[in-house]
Image (cartoon, rainbow, N blue to C red; front, side, top):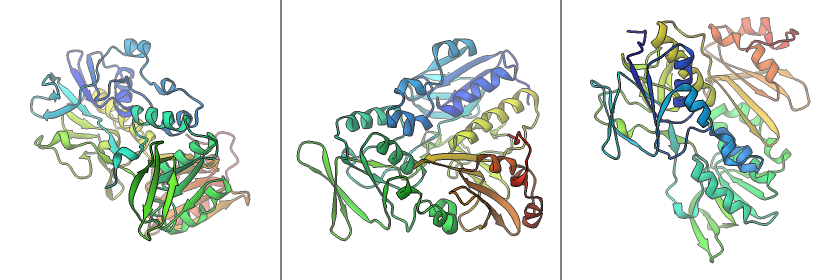
Length: 410
């Protein structure tokens, strides 16, 4: 039942953004009981988006991405258990077993174990990833040893690949993005929108090669250089190769728990998979409209944490939840509201003619999402179209993106 008591003990498994925000939101909602936050990495919770942006580009040290400073941990009264991967969850006793054999038992458990980078069937010792602190430390050490103009291959032209390429370019190096599809982001944003974005990389000074079929990577010499080998027998010599081809949820430790696992942990409208067990963030498979989805974005993790804390403390539903994400790449900002499918219809409803536009997705005549390039105000003014189901013709008639109010809704 909702209404955590001071005698309760909430165990949060996963010390990323979703886990840390859950601790913050529980305290903000008035929870006075014990909080334990378990993480498999040896570091206090940190923010991942800056890793592929400010840290990769050299603007920040990696410590700047820390979320849980010593003062914040003390203020929230959180017991941190770090460097201890969870290996099993007993739902009935709400007990978590750690790799070292230690068992942590609470009255409630939050699963916030997030996702990990997908890996290609290539020689991993020659490749770099951008997901965890040690990944970025290893990569930036390598990039720092390179000379201006050196080639760095980036496998994957999606959001993470584009952000990595942008950061590499900012360091004075030459990123070459290798994309398997006909255009970057076609699998996420669809044919039409990917076409609208097709020239963004080149305008930002980055070369993107599409329809790339990579069969192997090979070390060359003893200086760390790598050859990327393609299906047509051609090669690309690079000083480093970074892979960004998506992520997969960390759910293996939940085998035998009895929870419903389907591309993540299946949860209800309150983020619950059992009355005293919840899942939030990248690992949660939740209902959005007429489908269940798993969305790997910063704002979704934060919204999940807030909604769960409010429900467990008061039984109240949270505010209307609309998935949102953004990506800063090649000097532009792409933003998406909702969770459109790649085959949804889309129309451009606002275009300044200066590389700034807003598109409206629809499915079966109902607005399913919005996408914007350098149009943050117009996008947020239009958020209400997704709070309640809105017919496309009604959205076009209302045109909230053209409103002139000084303060768009958040």
